[in-house]
Length: 236
Image 1 (cartoon, helix red, strand yellow):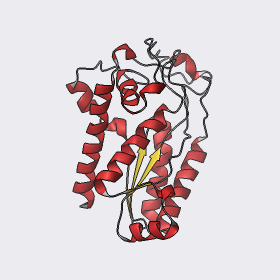
Image 2: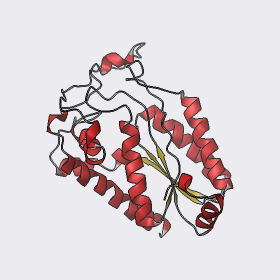
Image 3: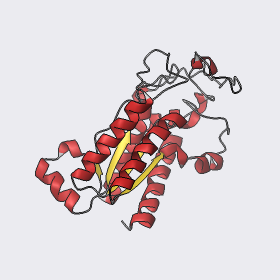
Image 4: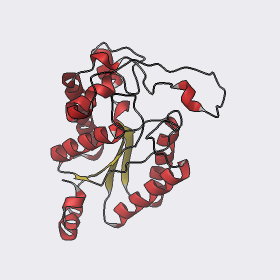
């Protein structure tokens, strides 16, 4: 159940009943020529909705903006600063806690290290300040096991086979048939003024073989793992 579909009273009763609140954190970012700008929002939203149904949880409104570096200057990428992400995450979590939420799961669809650090810092601040339980991860933290089982290229990444397949499973009409490959170009340890040169096509891997069946298996794998984690850690 999505929070925005509830009345104030309905929300209050669900939270008092101990419902886990799931906060999907997306992005608006270039993903090659074949995937929509909302790719990093489509995935965590889908996972959050499916997970909430499994555990009787509540899905908070998705946040569609993130911190970006290698795709920052590509058309369509709308980025916000590290400090903005951290402050927004902290404010949202603070509001959820004020409303009585004691178990919160934050799922990030965009998994760049800097972006993840900003949200993790906010989660840490809230857990230090309040007696609450917060779990934070990207759904891609859970997928290496499945990728290995499926025999995917270990270098498959941004807008590659796995990510393209996952979007195809949820919103196939948004995925283009022309899916050229791309790769990450290393510049060593140099800090670049134009980091998009590391990622000239905005694609890491060859998404030509992406398919909705793989995407469905991946999405289900993530949900199953999250159910196991929540059950083990929080007894739900």
